[in-house]
Image 1 (tube, rainbow, N blue to C red):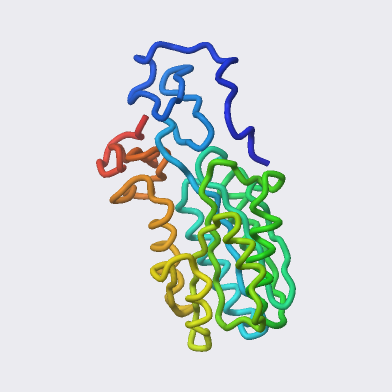
Image 2 (cartoon, rainbow, N blue to C red):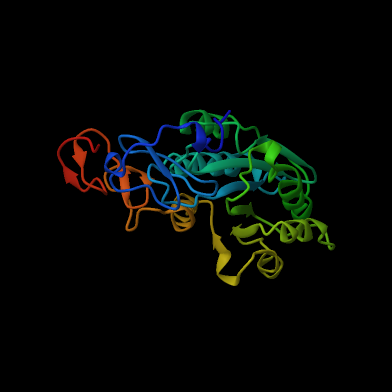
Length: 266
């Protein structure tokens, strides 16, 4: 489980601003060398990012098949492994659907990338029809909640992956998502998708993407980089973004974006 969402600033001995460089942003308070206590809605080492809560809603209907489902899980785990998953940065949940919906894990169930990617890779395949509206409604009503790890001031994003069209005509699930201001991004996979239907679900026309299972390993990272990238043009050499414009570098690399071969960034 994640730690507490925010720090009680009244309980912290405030250091001089010289202790934190760059200074804490958006009302954050410095309480140690380069340690900031952030106000609700902000995160990162210097309170300079407004991180989203993301729930993946994954199609596991019969048309997907076990082989393609396993490909999806593998590529999703690879993509998540490149993201700044941390209690104060990025939180991720996952649900799966066919003609029913099941929760894989909540937004606050995994505090490390390893435990999250392990859970993704261990997910088993179901089978059935394709009830998209029921699935997105479940995610918005039952998973974007405080009890399930949602943060009050974070931007909620639902990423839908499906290879077909919904068997439903009414859209109470979509209405539930709109009522909570959830941004919906859709990824249609393969040749059997109902493009018109999927485009009617996403929050903006540019939030719809089509791809194939073979190309999902490039589509997913590009999509996730777009909605979670705090370090443009991106961390190099396996670095992970931990604050706006600052990457945590693996051994042997340094610089704000891990672009310099040398020592580990501090």
